Length: 201
Image (cartoon, helix red, strand yellow):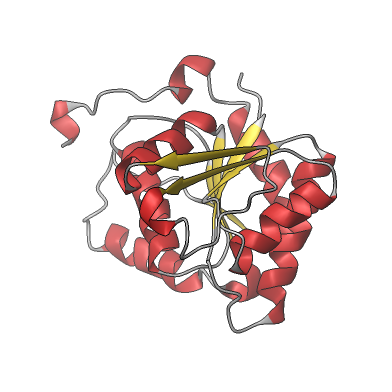
C-alpha cells in the first residue's frame, strides 16, 4: 500500500478564460497544505501555477518547484518556495517531477500541460509505473481529451492490455480522495520507474 506524501500538479502558466480555473488552483493549494501533502510543480509564479503554489504557501504547506533554466525568467520563479530546482532541460525536469511525486494531477492548461499529462499516461500504459494520474475537470475543461481517449479505444489504437487508467474528478474536493484511494492499491515498488517491456513497445 502506498501513501500520498507529495503530488505533482501540471497546470497553465496563464489564468485561462474563466475565473473558476484560478479559484480551483487556489482551492487545491489549500487542500494540499491542510493535508500536509507537498506540492511538486513547474516552479513558476504566474497563472494557475503561481496561484496554486502561493495558496499552498499561504496555508502553511510545502512547495518544490522544478524549472528548466531557460524558463526561469519567462515564468518568473517563485522564490518563496521552500525548494527550487533548476534543471538543464525539460527532460531532466520531467524526470525529477516523476521521482519526487506519489501521484499526478492536471488542472486546466495549455499544450505544455497536455504534453506532461500524456507522457505520464504513456509511461503508465507501458508498465513503467503505477502512480495515480488524475485530471481535475474544472468547468468540463478535460471533456474533449476524455472523448478522444474513448475514441482511440473504440478505434482499437488503445488495445487490450494497454488501457489508460485516467482518473477524472469533476470537483476539486474529489481530487485528493480519488488519488488517495488509487494509491492504496499501489505497492511502494511499483512507484519507481521501470524499464519499458519490449513486447509492449
